[in-house]
Image 1 (cartoon, rainbow, N blue to C red):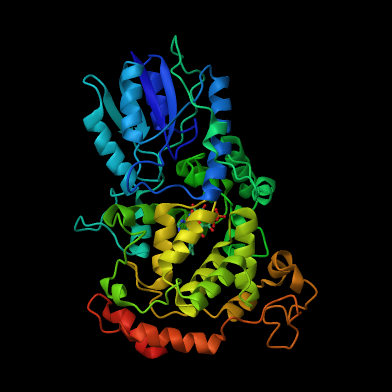
Image 2: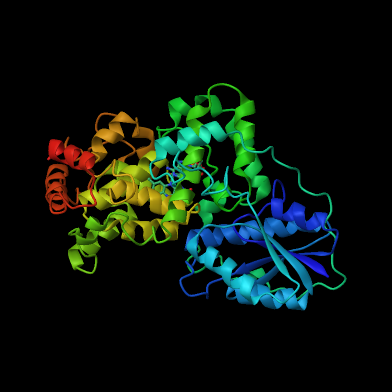
Length: 479
Ligand code: FAD
């Protein structure tokens, strides 16, 4: 009889409840990762995530080998593959961390039905600070808006203290067959676009801890610098948190112990829990508007040539808006983009170009190393105003003002080298000052024209039942 550990977005050994529980049973342990590109409606990982996954799996396998174990790799529909493996290994239990993406919830359900008699699936918490769904309003309903959610979370904190990794994993007498990671083709080739990512990131548990240690020296300054893209003000922990290479509880406690006022950072960390709570309530959040009125919104269709041209200009960082272009090029090069710039770039796609937020969500899904179903969808719907929180319904971010306000000159110089010679005064809007070099494109649409077009489009759904009164009042004031 063996025990299986089913790894998914929880690729670590420290503070990993499934690993600890499996070892405690005292039976031989078989750790497995299954690449599922096959289950219908399972969201296939994007290109940047696949690059990360490859390296993170290498790292996890190395760590397991140091403890006398190894990682078994399989491909296919996860529930079926795991059911088959459980039979092969005569497993009496499968331990895993509970996941909340709709396709993982479905897989967990299917697995319960497929498991041989005598094999149980045991799910543990640990992907979030608190189990999604466990924090509710006074009347027991789930929170929809972030601020009250944060208040309730803050009261329930701190999370449980993190637990150390086991010092040994008992191995089975015979290992089940494993596929070869290289055969999975997770790494890009012809062309290999991953050099910039490899220079910037170290996927894996050790890389996650190094990032955290480095951030702890800067954590006190987070509140002042987190919005300044030219400075290393944020933690850069998002891909490590997404792949579960470090637990959020560990990040919470380490940051608290670093001293100083770290509340602003902890509030951001709680956004991650908030997003998971939203997708638990609305599993289709990545593809369906939370506000039905948006189903009638007059998005421009990227199948049309001029719309597609605009979309490509946005994706390649050639919009003529330096802050947007710097962000999109940072994304292309490193698989990551500063949060403030994500907001500006996303708003630009949705409001300036009137392209459906779902197109942007998909673009980010493919290109971000931290692409996360919950966080990505929640932030895109928030930007569009179509989400549960209608705060951004009417806000049309002015990229040029934002660029100046958040002191982005050096950030633009780094990512848009054609503009590197421009002064702090001219670099945010070179066209306006007649300083645009020939190598840099003219704006694909003027800000005023874009703003008027967006307001007109938003006006077509005003008064629709599912847009709340407060959002409408703000809309009337801005229009
Ligand atoms: P820090 O500022 O150091 O924050 C610490 C951690 O808190 C982050 O690592 C992240 O886990 C969490 N966090 C911070 N802000 C948010 C937020 N707004 N929403 C959810 N979690 C947050 N984040 C993702 O992890 N994956 C995504 O796919 C993703 N897509 C986004 C799409 C858009 C349009 C926008 C505007 C934001 C998106 N974010 C996403 C949120 C945010 O931009 C990143 O989490 C952040 O930039 C990561 O950098 P950091 O680790 O240095 O963050």
